[in-house]
Amino acid sequence: MAEGNRRERRGERRGRRRPDRRDFSKDQRDPETAAFRVRSELGTLEKAYSQKDFAKQKASLEEILKALKPLRLRSIDELDFNTRGRLITTLLRVGRQTAPPESPAPVAAAAQEPAASTAADEASAEPASAEGAPTDEASPDQPPAAQAEAAPQQEEPAAPPVDEKATAFAEMMFALGSIWRAVADPRRAEVAFAASGRQPESETAPPPIQEHAADWREQAKQLEGQKRTRDAARLHERNQSFAEAARLFEAGRDLKSAARSAIAAKDLETARRILKLLPVEEGRNLLEKAGAYELLMERYVEASDFQNVARLYERAKQFDQAALAWERAGKLGSARKAYQRAKDEAGAQRIRDLEVEQLVQRGDRLGAAVLLMGENRREEAAQVLLALPAAKAFHFLQKAKLDEEAMALARREIQQANAENKPSVRARWLEWTGDTLAAAEAWEAAERKDKALEMYEQVGQWQKAAQLAEALGRKEKALELYHRAGDRDSAARLELAPEEATAGPPSPAAE
Image (tube, rainbow, N blue to C red):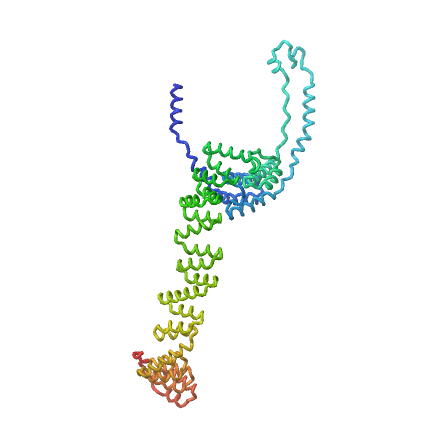
């Protein structure tokens, strides 16, 4: 029966599936995941710090240490800017806390110990009870075990009370020192360890680069033989053997580190090959951080991203090349500015002509004229606008500060309207040019008494405006204008006149 139960238990154990820890360890070594875990825990640590709760601070510090330790940082600068800044600020605040004062309880307990021991001695000195009663002395004939049982039991001295707050503070400072050591800051780590009153266990550090070069190479070979290629690669990287580090990182499928080491080793062919295996944005960020602008330029050219190519050239102050890149990207305004910074006036002029042509094709003739006016090319700007219909060209010429050309256009249109006997067209152009009285007469000739009324009123011709208002049947308006003109007789006559239905102003059919 027992044998059957054992077999069933073994079968259950065989059927259980072990959790897959490979993905978890990979996430632990991912810098972005670790940085996110650190940032998430910093809020809890700040809250515990504000409450002066050393136990909660220690728990948060240990969580941060779990996130940082797998990264094996050589410097805190390897963290991203946001995480690094927030982490340093919080750790410095936590480290500035002072140890809590010692509790008086242990002192009082120590004072009571002599009294307790005296009472125990007096009790042990009392004689045996009655005659014939057995005593505590062991007989020499008794075996050693019996003698041991017969020996009086001595009470152990009571342990002094533990100051929990001081202990929590010491453990918290030790966890803080461990974090400083994990981010390769030995000076701050030593200060925190000293405040905790204990030192960490010694870890085997890699041998120095100059003195024991053979030792670290042997250690790297052993790690590679154990299939710990990433650890071996980090050892090579710490000792500036970047080519071997790139090979081992690639074997360990850490492509970002492999590309970084290949760049450091100036092995551009290997770097290009590895970068093709990375996502585009990830590879660009890596090259930007490594300062490998030549490879970054190649990546932008392959993707036809000439805007970023132009920005890289501008960063290098190669403005002539930047202008060509901006031109290929279709950003003619940026290309013209780059040519101007490169002192290439011919190139700037060519790009400006292309800009004008492009604006005209898009229908933005006013923008093209403004661009030409920026170079004081008045005639060309006017010609660009005069290709529009006359009314639109007139207004655009005024917006482009081409007032003389606008007035010349208006005079030509007025002459043409006179020749074609179009009084309404002539009146409109006269109104636009500011000749209000002539415009009023032209509107009156065009049988547009409503428009003529407005013009006469603007120039102060109250009598003429009143007559037009009376002709239009606008009695109240006519009375007002007669009073303004001082014609009381006409005003009195109009007041006595009967109300008549008016048909309103004529429709602008001629217009």
